[in-house]
Length: 185
Image (cartoon, rainbow, N blue to C red; front, side, top):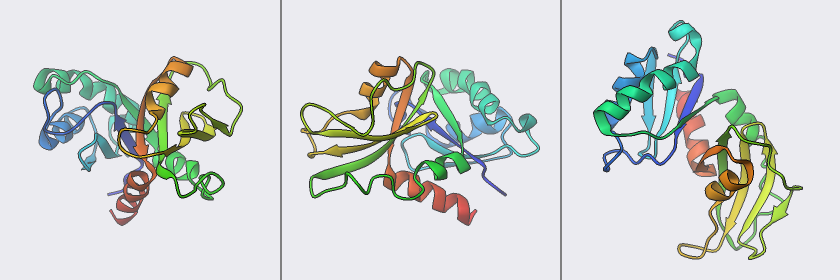
């Protein structure tokens, strides 16, 4: 089995109200045409193998699973799909290195679909010095969040507000573990 894509679901927390449990999420994606599925962590991050299935279209699989997730779990948010090669390329060469410091709380990847390009010259720092956007690539904005719980900035809502698109954010550590899990499969 070769996982070639990842789906990043917005506002999903497996097992919580309004979100599916792992078996329902994976089952809906399989019913929609995925050849293999592995839910990764509990935040709605999923590895997909669609080779030879569903016409090889991971986006069609996620769209096909949407009504099943709504019916079975009351989940109605977006699932953003990316080829794993694109996810890996987004973090190639440690793009966070120039802004990482002792105040770094999280390094993030905010995946975004739709809307306009990010209207900022990068790198960019917010006025509170709690968020840097360090790079933007097609469909993803890389950020560094400073501070800690209760004092940090929210890259997800800012990307949505600035672009008009739909976004979901994952930490660099989550993305690195996802890529490692895909390589081991």
